[in-house]
Length: 183
Ligand code: SF4
Ligand code: SF4
Image (cartoon, rainbow, N blue to C red; front, side, top):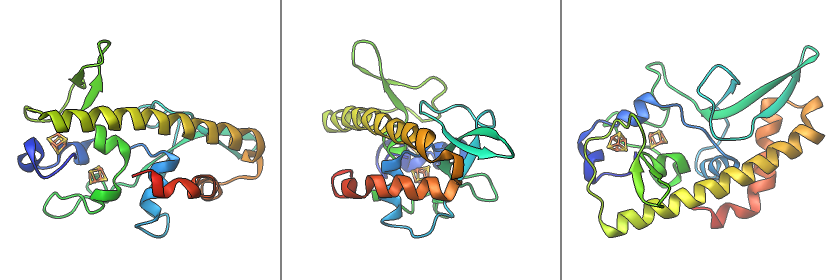
């Protein structure tokens, strides 16, 4: 969900009801500054969901390594846990980067294109909106890269004695100093 204006205002938040929202370390740090606890995070094993464009983190269980990704929790209707009764985002200013980027990608010429299968009504972007999408796409890639580095550090040094909760705490510790600059 991008905002209250444009097609978001009359499409009933289709994206928030349909897609699993992958979280990076920066997304978690930003949300954790707003929402305490970790109940809004869901860890999913590789293969149980469409693979996000991110590095997996490892958890050693019963003598084998399992690969996981972190997503936003879903409610009993399988909608995003932060979707309000009026289809509003309850954490709008702290929402994950992927929510700020959807439904656009940059094509080979660097122009914005709607993702294949995009659920939005037609978008007509102003120059300002177009600029914001480009900036968010760039930040998303940087945050995925940083997240990947943290996952690799965890996998190499901490995964053997780790748990999902410890991994989230590890990400928060690594990301703490960046919270103020990551909005
Ligand atoms: S599906 Fe598209 S138009 Fe609808 S809320 Fe999401 S981003 Fe907005
Ligand atoms: S965090 Fe907000 S914008 Fe993102 S999926 Fe949930 S309700 Fe939608």
